[in-house]
Image (tube, rainbow, N blue to C red; front, side, top):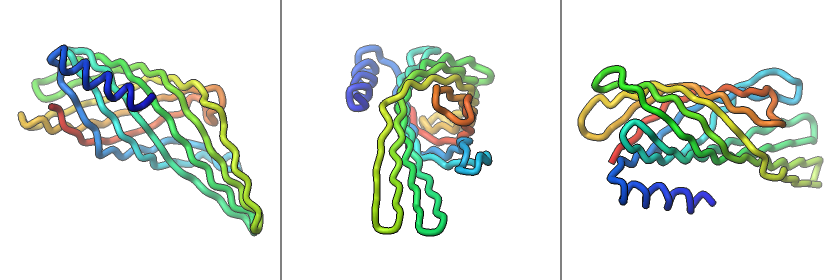
Length: 176
C-alpha cells in the first residue's frame, strides 16, 4: 500500500506539473502514556513525500517508534507504525513563508513483545484507523528548493491513550 501511494504521488506530479517535496529529516515528539499512566514524550522516526499543485498538497507520511520497559525479569518492547495521507492547503503569509493546514486519514499498528525470563511472546494489533489535523509554518529561505517546517499535529484513534494525541515536529526537506 505504501509503495502504491508513493508511486501515485510521483505519477501525479509528472502529469500535473506539480512540485514534489521530500522530507527525509524529521524530528518529532509525540505524547504517550507509560505503564504507570504517566504522560511521556516519544521521539519518532518519520518520512514524508508530498505533491503540491498550486495551493493544495497531498502528503504521504510514515512514522515509527519503539519504546521499552523493564521491571525485574519482565521486559516489554512496543513498536508503533502508522501511515497517513494528508490533504493540505497552503496560505501564503510572506514570499518565503506559508501556513499549511491539513487533515489526514490513515492506519496504525502496534506490535508488543513481552519477555519473562527466557520465554518470549509477540502480539500484533490489527490495522486500526487513524485521523488527524495539523498546522505548520513552512519556510523556504532560498530559491534552491530547501524547506524548513515546524508544526503540530493532533492524532485521534479509538485506542490512543491519551486521545487525542498531540505531536510536535521540526523538519527539513527539498522541493523539486
